[in-house]
Image (cartoon, rainbow, N blue to C red; front, top):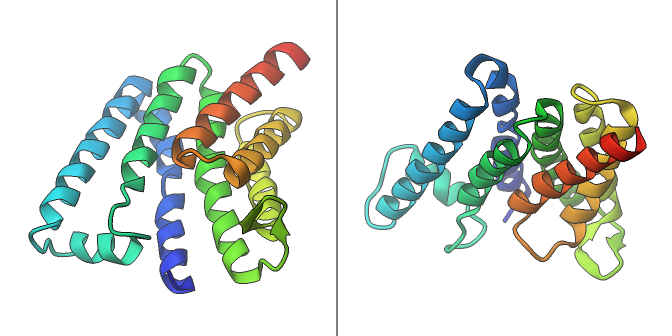
Amino acid sequence: MNHKKEILRQAIHATGIIFVIIQPLVGVKNLILLGLVAAIIGEIIYQYDRRHCIPFFSWLLRTCRRDSSERGFIYYFLGLTLTYSIFGFNIPIANAAIIILTIGDAASTIIGKIYGEHPLPYKTNKTFEGSIAFILLAFIGALTQVNPLTAFIGAFIGGLVEAYTPLEDNLTIPIITGIGMYVASTLIL
């Protein structure tokens, strides 16, 4: 995928921060419902698009798809939904975990693809530059929700998960960072 397409894909990825912005207005239960509905509608559009051209959506799916079988958007909405389901009792941590996913993951990909020159050990398709961008921008974003130490712990854990997890990072980043921040805020702080 060329850089322009990847930047578009990651810009769309970063729009997930809308969940954090509207959360106080709609509440956690409605946000969970919205995430599930978005995943279902996304899957319906994806399936319909396989046989028919849908104005705008077909272009968007083809432009942002990394390969023909990818359904990252489903995992993305499920990651948002599960994060609010698990951490709905602690909204600052849920919001920080979503910010870490949306901003950190987008930053790591864009910076890593454009400026990355130093591959990570054991993961040569990821770079130090991308990982540093993830941690730095995720930390700054998480600071809007939690204290600096909790934000740093979440951003650092998120950077490690993004760089090294073999699983779908749209699920693992917000859930694992949420757990890390919750443990840190409960035991350490």
